[in-house]
Image 1 (cartoon, rainbow, N blue to C red):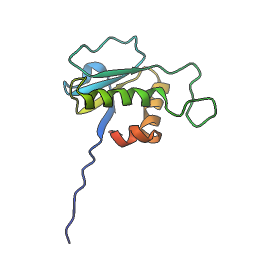
Image 2: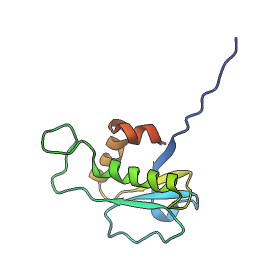
Image 3: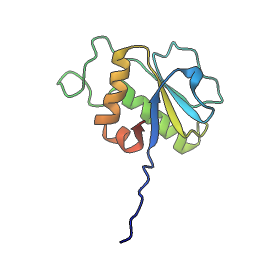
Length: 118
């Protein structure tokens, strides 16, 4: 019986500090007022609106800010507009920010097709 090993080709996302990111890792940063990563690194920022809560309610858009930021990273990578990256480090400042990233990777169809939580 032939066993095939299917590799998960999605881009891994892990939580960490910007200073801990390897040269081939992009940054997903909660709050755009964080220190800019410099031109040599791909990065996208997101801001949670005041009173942000999980998607699925009538008052929130279906795509959250973290999912939209991940989409911007992916498109910039695909178009060659950002330095190539092999992984993403999510630099969150709040538990709500971390929850937004987790939610994007679990619930947003495009984000979970392109990225996976490490």
